Length: 299
Image 1 (cartoon, rainbow, N blue to C red):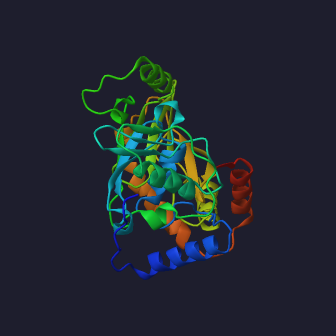
Image 2: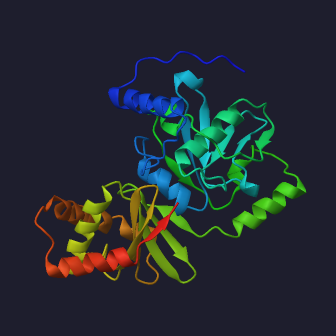
Image 3: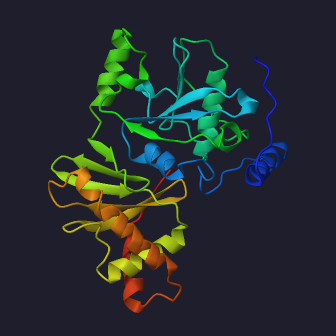
């Protein structure tokens, strides 16, 4: 096992999080925060890649304690592999996998740390349910940006000019069949347009606290201002990893680029609604109850 390098100074938030993780490990317990990816750059995109984006990748880097290694975070790997150490040295770790301790951050960190110790050309085919241990917040360089790139196929998981085996080709073809056209908006954070059959949707991963966000959405919905653009319809929200992801059905045929201008306008209206501290009116309470009744929790 390679000797880990000593880490330099860290900010107070990171130090406190690591101290809490250490205390939980020493106590023999597990730490499963409500917001699994809180504190990571691009928290909204981490959640979106885990739940609503079919094929995407993003670069990240481990911190100095864990070798300052460049890694690639992906939505899913063919065969539902937890992680892969390619022959060219590239390390890939998947957000969508079958192992769940209740804390996705801990699960992904466990897969990452295990695959980092393997030789190039190794795939992590199985990950035991991880016990207490480091989370992504403890392992990654929190100053490194997290920028998502979407893909139309899963070819990005293979080295350039690779000649995959028949088994790998079969797995990739199977997963490719599940890819729906998806585009990340550039004018706002965490918003993804997608087309499912003949219908278009916008799913927007938000980092506001759940109760405040639901109140704000209810205020806008009661006031008939919850549409992102003309012809769209706010249809509800789901919850994942501690974040609320509102969903809109768009006017038929709406393309992603048509949302770039109205999306910041909606975000401004949402910010105004979030700033209101008055109790909800009877109409707003009814709107909120309707949103909550349709809300689905994903984990």
